[in-house]
Picture 1 (cartoon, each protein chain N blue to C red):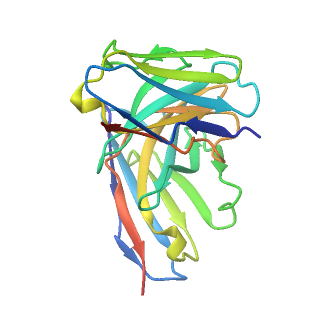
Picture 2 (picture 1 turned 90 degrees about the vertical axis):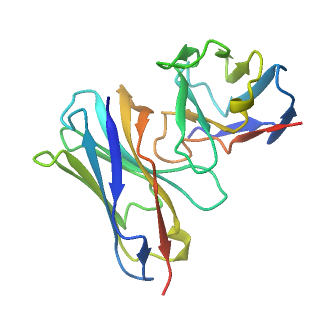
Length: 122
Length: 108
């Protein structure tokens, strides 16, 4: 059974870089027709897509975050990562990693990590 | 660009009742729509994809349907564990505006 687990600092200072890693077990990040995604949820609010990466390294990023976000894949460790630069309080959220099934385009999420709360505060 | 609008924002029902949740797309997206359930403190769980296909392990009381740009998630007879927030999601302009704003299903 596929499992995903987010890890990284729970507190980041304003203007610094948020870095999270998602470790995948029970499956491979080089699976075809699969993307590896990051989604966030500000406290008390809905879900927001951040972006995703395919096994070939193709990426999709939210236009509002594109200048600040990088998603990368580490096939040797079966992990993928999120970096978000120049963070502000508006980036405070629970961050989820997820496996995304592709159907022509990146589509639905069939496995999720448990989520990790990242707070941006000095 | 597709925007998903869910209604109602909150639905108050009792266990055993039938729940009907709606998601309307701003333009035609064929049947490429998924539904998720999220309970407090938990990650979302995939319920339905391709508008009407139940994900693995999802009880038969959950069903999805669509017509044109209107999508419906139906829970035939509510169980206590079904009270949660439900989100619809489309693929066309991932990751922008990919999710609806959610419907909270609460106990009446």
